[in-house]
Every structure is written in structure tokens, then in C-alpha cells.
Image (cartoon, rainbow, N blue to C red; front, side, top):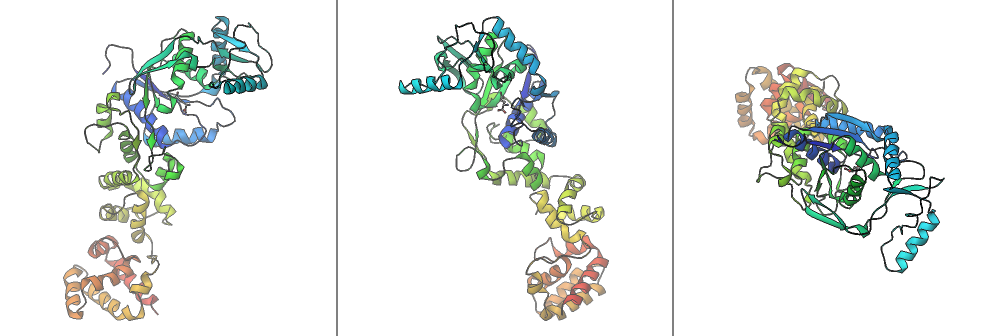
Length: 464
Ligand code: GLU
């Protein structure tokens, strides 16, 4: 707990230019865990200054994904698009104090400068042409931060250690565009100052932005927060995790039937560790999370591990809790308004098989439909005219031994010389339309005797 310093405040500021991806969700989680661990607060902000690429529907889907993951926030969502006056005020303040200046260089001027730098074998960089010209605003003008080319700007990264940049590497950064919109660097710093952010935890693709932002903090006379840059998430081929590795949006996992606990557990372990422990409850994560245990090299996303984690959490769920979240998956499988009692009864038997809610719905389907829907090949393999006499016998035996059909079915197996492995698949096909299910006596128990007999009769009637 942070008892002496200021209250810890973290933030998650995605740009709503797409859905929430695993990388963003991991950043959100680390910020959330750090705030919760220290009894601090967590701010959620939508960085929608790019009006062309930002979309309300993306903002909505990011908010929904945060809610689904259970990453609640103490403040927000703030929208940068509603704070343009404040950014303009900060830019004016920098202009008035001489920390920023108007630049009238046209795109052609800048292109010429770039070409010259290139020809001289230097990095393309603004040459400071307008820095000392004391220009005023004008159509097409931008505001730039005045950066001393001397010295260095560094910070002690809480994950990566000390990082230093030479100031002559850092351009006189644009802080206000010619259309009067603030740039990302300006807006993010003004917000983090105004919102009292103490720790900026974000992806290490932002490392090179940090010295630029530190210069803005300094120019505004504000204290810089502490920075922690978390390594990227890689795909199994060690390339940056992207669509080509399969689903990367949180919502895709929700739709595939993953549980938020499994996603959070998996994300926590991408970059952070506590010994070799793999499974963490949320409370454990909050208690144990520490930036010191975040590794400085990238971690690899392993889809099978996530699937195993999901299966773990499904198996440990209370069936009653699974019922409501299974309903949409059942509806998609064509089962509407399922009989909840049957669903509750079958869940303990199918939970060992369903690794996702989608798979669980698949396993639950035969018990919830009025009639089984035979899967491809099942009828041809188990319910042909040749099977009819056996199925008839099965019906008679079960009908005559409704209270406990098991011993009678074993006797039938002996009498017919058919191994249970050959006999029971016929019964399974009639009862479920599948060639795989929980144990046949469990199936009969889930269905109840009335439905069991009705399904065998129906299968018999359908064999021509
Ligand atoms: N909007 C930025 C992004 O989505 C936030 C970067 C930051 O954390 O400062 O990458």
C-alpha cells in the first residue's frame, strides 16, 4: 500500500479507432491492477482527437469490453473531443510564455527540409526555421514546442530501467495542428496533468514518445508522472501479435465463449509473473501485482494456454452461473427458451467437455431440443434398417426396466454377444443424434425416462 506518497492514479486512454485488442486490454488490466493494489484510482479516457478515425461505435465497443472484463473505473470515460478548449488554453499558455511558437512552414518547405537532411545523411527533422521569428497565428500555421537541442531528456522507467534520449533527436514538436486541433502529445500530457495521473503504464511502443511528452510537462511547469513501459505481446511466430495470429479483439473472445476470468488470468501472465503460478483469482492478482515483477522482454500469446485456462474456469463454475451466459450461445445453436431444469442437470456432465461456452452449448443442445438433430453420418452409421431389430430390443429392455436399465442392458449385451461398445452407440445415436456424449446412463438420466423412450420410438419410426 502506498501510505506516504500521493494517492496513486493510473489511466487507460485508448483511441477509439478500432475494437479493444488483447494488447490494449492487457495495458488496461495492468493499470487497473496497479491502482487497485495500491488503493488508488483508475481513470478511463477516450482519446478521440482524430475525428476522422475515431468512431462512436468503437468507443461504445471499448466501453462494453471493459465492462465485460470487469475493469471498472473510478473516473471517466472522459472524451478528449470535449476538452479542446482546455488544450487550446494550454497551447496559448506555452505560446505566451515563449515555450512554444508559431511555425509558418508550408508542407513544401518541410519537404525541402526533409530532402536536405536526407542528402546530408541526417535524420529528417524540422530545422527550426521559424523558432526565433516571433510569428503570429496565420492560416495554415502550426504551433511547435521550443526544444533546446542541447542536453538530454531521460526517465527512470519502472520496467525498463533508465532511458535517455539526446535532445537533438527530438524535433520541435507540433502541439497544435493547422486546423486548430491539438496533437496526441499535447492532449495526453494536458490530460495526465489535469487528471492527476501518477503512473503511466503503457506499451513500449510509446517509449520514444515519452521524452517528447516529458518536455511538454516541463514546459507547462508540471511534475512528470512515473513511466512503466510494458513489452509487446508477440504471436507464436514471435512477430507482434496481430490479426494474422487469429482473433485479437476482446469481443471476438467473448463471442467464442471465453470467460472474462480466463482472459484476465491469461493477460496478467503476459509479461507479469509470480513464481510459476499460472492460475490467479482476481483478488490474488490485486494482492500480488507489482510492476517489479513485469519482465522487460516480450511475452508470447499462447492460444492453447488460454483455451486451457478457459476450460479450468468453466469446470470450476457453478452451473447456475453458467446458465444465463450460455443462453445466447444456445440461441445461436438454434435452442431458444431451453428448459432450465434440464440444462442445470446436464451441465455437470458436459462441463468436463466444453472448453468454451460455445462448445458447452454444442454439448447441451441434444438434451434441450424437442428432438435430437442427428449429426452428419450418424444415421448412416448407427440407425440403418440393419440396426432396427437391435434398437427395438433396446427399447423393450429399457421400457421393461425403467427404474434401473443398466443391469438389463448389460444382460442384453451378453445375450446378443454385442460388446457395450457396439450396442450403446446405437442407443446414443437415437437419444442424442451424436456419436459422442457423456455416459449413456447419464444421458438417460438427463432426459428422463419419458423422453428416452420417446426418442427411441421416434428413431425406430424414422428408419425405413
Ligand atoms: N491513445 C494512445 C494509444 O491508444 C494512448 C497512449 C498512452 O498511453 O499515452 O496508444
